[in-house]
Image (cartoon, rainbow, N blue to C red; front, side):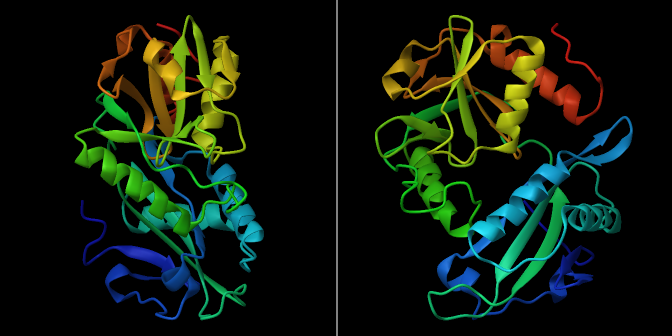
Length: 296
């Protein structure tokens, strides 16, 4: 994937500049220690033009992540949203992925930074998994213990854990990994939350050991609107081998079905699953095709 070219424009340190002319501080805590926060945000070509999906929710979380990690940051969610629309316009993008990144200032000590820099860039985005159903393995890598990190903050350094899990899955011949928490309960994927279906009910891990995603909340809202039963509770991976269906959800992936776990096929075809209903409702929402969710 090409993230930028000669003409790509990004926002950095208060100004719009060409991506090829951008530079970073080599003494930044983000580079040396992973102390930085970011968001992944999608924009879509809708019947009403280019729209960023849930921008305020994402930018509120970005600002909260800065607060939790003691990174100084003084942009409002309104300012960040307007800057993001300008980035899309300057790069002639509609269906795109936006990456706001708060870079901690130079500091070679293990203390809070005194300043930060904001970068916002965007690139064309289509389908993360090509909308195929995924083969998933149970990762040997656990999600970080919430007593060792601030699990609700979307921190750059936390994603080394995700890279390890995804690489392991691909080395084993799977599409993606499913990670457990320190107590052996199912947590989430490397970059997405997890739901599974059994006997007409959807189940998902509760807050506490997961990054509670914005798309996850959208799924919960869709289930409420469509009166689809959903429960948040802890469960062990053994339960998944009796599941009817399962899916990941996240900003990058959207709603993506899972075909098998550790080589064991799930009981339902994706087309007849509750996940497929949620997927269609989600797609209608982000493209603004309908103001109501319709079960077909």
